[in-house]
Amino acid sequence: MNPTDQRPEPGLPPELGLTPELAARLQRLAETQTRDSRPFPRLETSVRRDRITRYGGLALAGAAAAAVVAVQVLAGGAVDRADQGVPSRPTPTVIATRTTEPATLEEAGYPTATVGSLAGDKTWQAAVRERLAGEDDRVDADDVHVVAAGDIEDRARYAVLVYSGEKKGKTYWGRDIWLGDAGAPASRMTSTASSGLSVSPDEVPYEPLTLFDAPGDSYDVAKAVVIVSAPGADAPQIATARTFDVVGTTEKIDTTRRAVPSAGQGVWAGPVTEDEYRLFDARITVGGAETGGSSAAHAPGYDLVAVAAPGTDPDELEYLGGALGENRATSAQTPVWAGTAKAGKQGQAVATLLRSANGVYIAAFSERQPDDGDYNDNDAADEEFEAIQRGHQVTEADSDSAAMASVWIEHGETRRYLVIAPQNATQVRVGQVTAAVKNRMAVLDVSSPFTGEPEDPAVEPVVALAADGSVIAQQTPPRSQEDTFLSTVDVAGGNGRSVTP
Image (cartoon, rainbow, N blue to C red; front, side, top):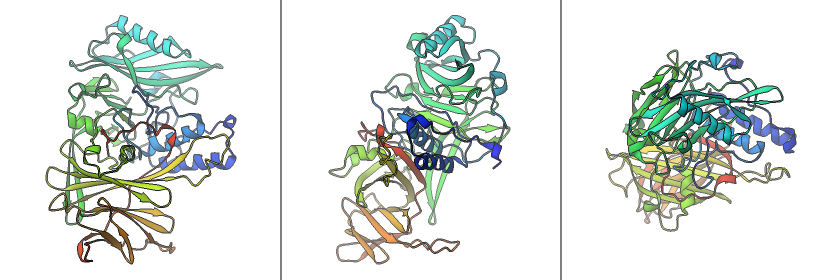
């Protein structure tokens, strides 16, 4: 990738009091996680629910948390919750479309006049501009540009707003998507996805931004819509269905897509089905080449409490959000089991099993560990931090009770295996290491010393054992696919009843 393909993240402010080592570590982490994407670096999905929750992209206190947010939002391994905006994983393909950041709306590719079905309603547009300016004293109404506005059938009314504010003679830009009921006055519109004002002057946000949502707090699938703001992009394609299968021992995941109706230059908007809402998966191209971007959604998820093993903490189930990465499942998949297990001295593992309509099973795993102390030892940072790894496996079984699934996670010279065992298994074994199964879940730590060879040591199979020691089933697990590093500042409030793996 060219050095000009992606702008470095802004440095951490010295007034936060972070040690140089901590600041450098945060910066390296953010750069490592985002180096293969062209994300929306200033995305801060606004919260309009009744609590602050785990997922990054929210306004966390302090620049250290802001750096963590960058890792979560831009890397995409994060806790998806139905009660807040959920930025999805950016597209890994990187196509450079600019070598400098645009400083004007024209340079960014926005239309010169409002597009959409409300393009001619100047009174409503003026009211929206006044409303935004009234909520941010850094912005004047005259500096709010209504890029697009309209009604999407009888489902919702939307507005894409790009605005600027002056500070010490410099101009800072932001972009919002507002949403309300169809026909709503400006006073009933809500800022649903927002970048806030940029951290750097003279940079107009132009990266693709997609919102899947329904007005209000009900997540009403009958009112769900998609809005895409992507100046210069081709017609975006959204996922409309996804199927899971196994061919031999290899998972096969197929996604069907369709185009979103155009609302005018650089803006697309339209209704979505329940499955499209649950998938919240947009593919955007510029000049025919796939590019990065961010998606926000308040889509419904699965009620995992209903299938959880006795004693499962509902809040732990929320850590499964994002475990399937870009391969989120639909209403065609049914949860059949969920549970937790200890992982190491202080960690926790959690897993769930979904049955697909064709009898194939999709397993989602998550493991969280407290950080090693570098952050917590810093006097200026009173937050705690967690490292989270997630993965999934698509597998076959004759029944819910016979289903087995596993992934492995790297911890230095140790491989940690997370296992969902068949219902009648009492132990699982990897090599010479065994672990007891409780409520169908087991965790094993297996030494895997670094050899310096180009290829990692072969992954050993997981064997499920009956009480008499006989083998019930065995499989070779994949490595976990999703990584996140986040602050626990917004952990509170999960109930495990709308989880999006």
